[in-house]
Image 1: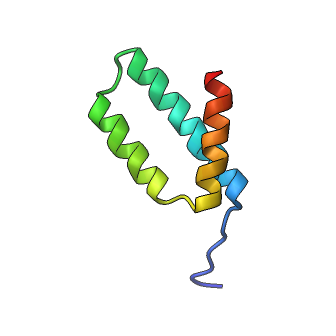
Image 2: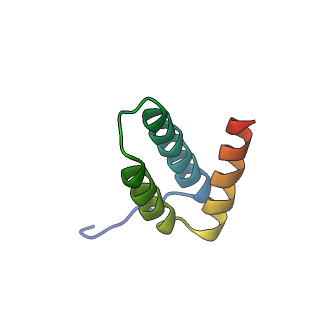
Length: 66
């Protein structure tokens, strides 16, 4: 059992990314965080997503913005 990794499905990972994205954008608007910090962290988190998770996250973000 040592070294066992539990993978999350694309939808769960996309939801987590979307939540982080929204929280960071809110903090940015409120002046609580620097733009470069937000961009760097989101780029890092996005890099970890699968192609399908990226698509799902983008759809969620688009629906949130509308």
